[in-house]
Amino acid sequence: MACLRLILGDQLSHSLASLQDCDKNQDIILMAEVKTEASYVKHHKKKIAFLFSAMRHFAAELTSSGHQVFYRKYDDKENKGSLFDEVKAFCEKISDTDKAITDIILTHPGEYRVLADMQSWQNKLGIKVVIRQDDRFLASLEEFANWAEGRKQLRMEYFYREMRKAWYCLMDGDKPVGNKWNYDSANRKALPKGMSPPPPTTFEPDDITQEVITLVKDNFSDHFGKLERFNFAVTRAQALQVLSVFVAERLDNFGDYQDAMVQGEPWMYHSHISFYLNCGLLTPKEIIELVENAYRHGHAPLNAVEGFIRQVLGWREYVRGLYWFKMPSYQNENFLNAKRPLPRFFWDANTKMNCLSQCITETSDNAYAHHIQRLMVLGNFALLAGLHPDEVNEWYLIVYADAYEWVEMPNVTGMILFADGGLLASKPYAASGSYINKMSNYCQHCHYNVKEKLGAQACPFNYLYWDFLERNKEQLGSNPRLGMPYRTLNKMTDEKRLAISRDSQIFFKALENNEEVRTAH
Ligand code: FAD
Ligand code: DLZ
Ligand code: SF4
Image (cartoon, rainbow, N blue to C red):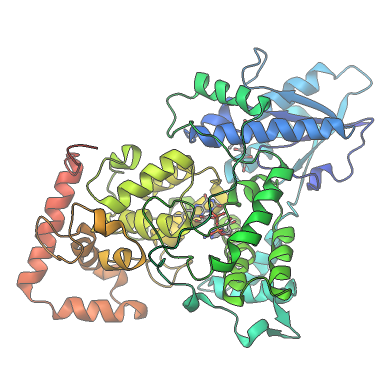
């Protein structure tokens, strides 16, 4: 009896559920670089190079530890183009040998469309298909559903507290360490002048990575993003190095400057582990343990450690639970009835709004932007401009090397666009230019003036903010957390309200005509 164990590109963990009882003498591990996965959206070139290289390195590790691995390269003439067709062809090829496949063993995938496909395989192939839970996550889908069932609002904070207790993380007895669950309010400093974060941990591409880079150049030249200077980790050993350097050099300041943005500093004090965590080279449990230990041994302050652990044990587990709890209907949410198409500058960064231009350029260069850039610059614009959720979701899925639908969609649909009507967030993360000015130095280099509220030189975020509130009064006017801004809006003179609407219309018209661009880039 031989089992076929399919490992996907984001399942590169030696502890993976579908590898746990693998018989090295009998079972075959199948991994495949396929067109369907590489092109269902036009992923950033660096994302494809990263995953293909990490997959090839992982397959080599499995082989050297004695496993039998069948690895299909993208440019192999025999490549069947999809995961199903690779599995089918493999099973057929050995069906009348003594290695005929009796069971196909899978780990629950990260995207609904892949799960739906896999669920049809048993019937199509006439071979037993087993889909195991992905136990790399710290909350099972069942545990999340039990927590969420019957609640009107699914606030991360309450889920996070349950996770802290369940994993006994940063706890003193039954109390949170420091007697406070959340140190978010201590995590909102701008970066002082003269302070510069350490450079990120990078790696020279080895032969495997070089080969993949050439493959991506040859096959994905029409995809978004720059391939030059690819220097990600591609093995678990390298990813562990990224993590340990983060703990040694950046964690200290992670809390204070978590929300800060600086022109020319794409990496700040963040950890840059999402690429590795989401494809399985690192696991959340080991990360949390390492970071908690840093606190327990006095190497990092509590606001940094709690702030970081909240992201991994709280937000990451929460968005994954929410995605599976609400799919497939979650993908159609559009509470604010947003309709505007994605402006062209999201692809070429060619806009006079400096904060957007910087964040998009860095996204194109690195397949990375840190959280507050994704949320309060790019996301804030998408919300205020009323961009259609489908287009915004697709963009975020394409451009970041850590993007898979389970994590991307709740962040876009729920967190930035409020398209789920407040299931994830208690109010939209909407802000005027003054927030961006407070947390960054982008405005100092901008064509627009952040202090001006109206007129051709005014920062567009300033009038778009009020126009957004006015446009969405029916859906948002009774939100208790928006009481203050709505009271301010209601007190404005008709003249001011008209001017806000007029400037917003001028801006949107220019956007439609792709005129909101700078003359020299
Ligand atoms: P750090 O700031 O160092 O945080 C540590 C870790 O916490 C991250 O690696 C990540 O695993 C986790 N984390 C932090 N915030 C979140 C969050 N909101 N949701 C889930 N996990 C979180 N993260 C992705 O991994 N993939 C995505 O496709 C993705 N899309 C996003 C889209 C939008 C609109 C927004 C607002 C956020 C998105 N995030 C996504 C969350 C977050 O921005 C990234 O996880 C983070 O920027 C990755 O960089 P880092 O590893 O340096 O993170
Ligand atoms: C993202 C991605 C890409 C670009 N290519 C592959 C691939 O060729 N083979 C593969 O097994 N997985 C790939 N992936 C990751 C999958 O898209 C991911 O496993 C699903 O989206 C489920 O999360
Ligand atoms: Fe962005 Fe407005 Fe500041 Fe320009 S002035 S960088 S558009 S917030």
